[in-house]
Image: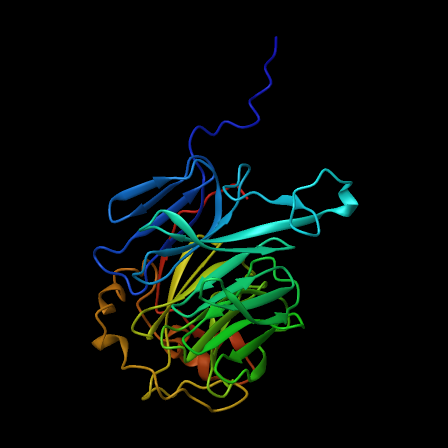
Length: 350
């Protein structure tokens, strides 16, 4: 009798990635791209690519969506080409592997831009004038034109997560040394290096106004905030004491709140510095001075209280009381913690 269990009991599509507009609205398109029979949904319409999409990026309220094939049956598979671009029946050593990034025009249902690379495309970011592409050991900036024109390429340390951020006049990505961040001003090409962490980066995000950069390392206990104007560290936030894999960092459209998710199955919400805040880093007293007012005046303040299931929405000084003011105690007693948290559902599968 054969009693061996099935190796794969999955019956439905597996979601690989998703993307929404920022800022969100009641009719914001949502892209849900899956391992099998993916659907591209925007305002109720749908598009079946009948293949897998591994990464996606939407361009505001425009019709353009950056797509990268992924999964067991990628929509834009890699292919072998000869040195002159022709598909040839040559030995493996004589071929070059090409990986594609497609900028899809959903209004015309065609690929508006196609970029090819010799290594796997891990992530892409879009703006109305630029395309930023992250590979394992480099990032490339292109002008969003037809055909696209390469502006510059920068080397990075190993970047398996495809970390990169694209603002209106700034791009951010891992540096050549693990734990460092490179900031590049698009208009001038000036490059700044931020020694953000002592270990490799796991997540980063840029605020909508481009003035704050949030980073987390592979350890996942601390999130650090930097000013993009002078690269100064303006705050350090503690997610927890135990190491964790950070899934995502996101800053609210009001530039006042930071959301953090991790494999601890918890969503944390932090306050971001604003003009009247005295938040400073341990290494300097710099504070950013261009962030809008506190969350009390933000339309997103309604999420401040209901999210917390175990906290009383206290600040870090209130969290540990007098212990946070005593010297010689471990730093975790005086660190800044989230003011709200909530459990989230995560998949046990890798």
